[in-house]
Length: 85
Image (cartoon, rainbow, N blue to C red; front, top):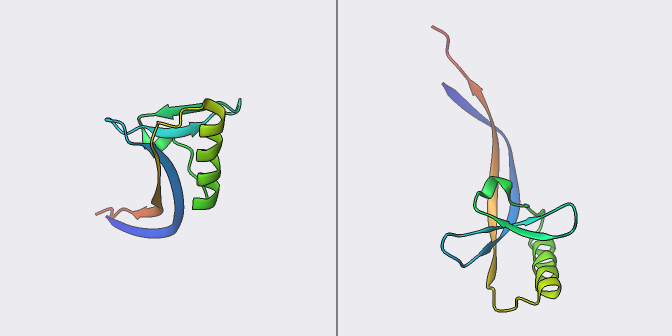
């Protein structure tokens, strides 16, 4: 089996310092949520946009004691070439 990287995306997610780590998810209704699975987290195109949403969370919830971090991600899209013998 051969893997061919087609595209790599740089993204950012907002995480909590809780144990277990929780990932920020912006709901379509404009509400804030946290999920345990990073696949369901909102990923942002830039650190600046992620920081803007982090500030929205603090302004909307007044939970200023909740420590949130912005972490970078690399998302790879790969094609798999299978060998049929």
